[in-house]
Length: 175
Length: 181
Image 1 (cartoon, rainbow over the protein chains, first blue to last red):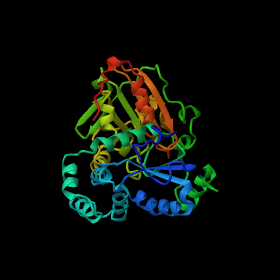
Image 2: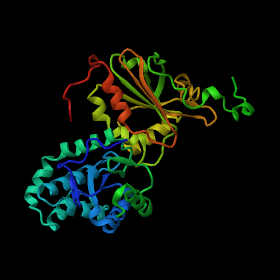
Image 3: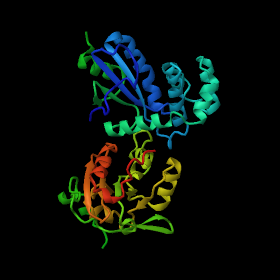
Image 4: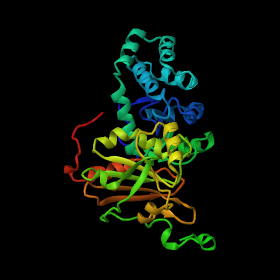
């Protein structure tokens, strides 16, 4: 299975666009497995540095995780104000507290215009964007969260630190 | 006919994996309970595509769970006017508890008595295990199987195969153009 569509300017990315390896995660902010993967990805980014570009796409299982959809929209709303990754991080660090008032608190904590954030959330401005991510995940072969793609190919192995790091180095980020 | 326990430990080769009914085959009709007092028949859905998802058992882990994924995909299936039906050998009360716990919004049918009878008809029963394969069938509005797929029991196949099969159906099946949600 390969990533469909490929990474574009539409995506939220960290790291240089010309990095030899791109790691894409499809995740759900309320999924405990994604919570476990979060510090692992951080550690790998730290280890590999500029040889890695990291991309996050939304794959909320909103029936199983009742806060997942709004959390995903909150990250997108933060992204519209240039603070996607700040919200992404705080959501994974506070997975146990993802009620709507919590999301507004986080928006304030990372310095967003909370009036705009609340309006965007209430109007569901980013619901379509989250749904687009979900559909792209299905088309790419995502069958659960987290799912990782390394240079466009689905990573079917474990996502423990050693396994994921080895797969990324094998893909060309070893130097 | 009572089962012979001695024989039941020896799987019959023709009843094991990869014998699922292939595309072009008329889908065997069935009528199974979805709740203690309601039944669902395949013919109820004539005129629209049906996705039959046989799965081994209720209560597999959440995040990688096939039924949870398909539940999230219902709006995508609805673009093709397609109906999703889950089938396992679990009883109706088990299905009710599972569906409630996972907030499933599609019917789960009990292939319970005679156990696995419908799965057998679709070539999707694991006689030596006593539950069905993880098998998918996309059936068109005339009741013909257009796509089938058997996954390893422990692997969630994802939903791409279903979407591709629905896309390949003739347009008169009720595909709502631009019906994005």
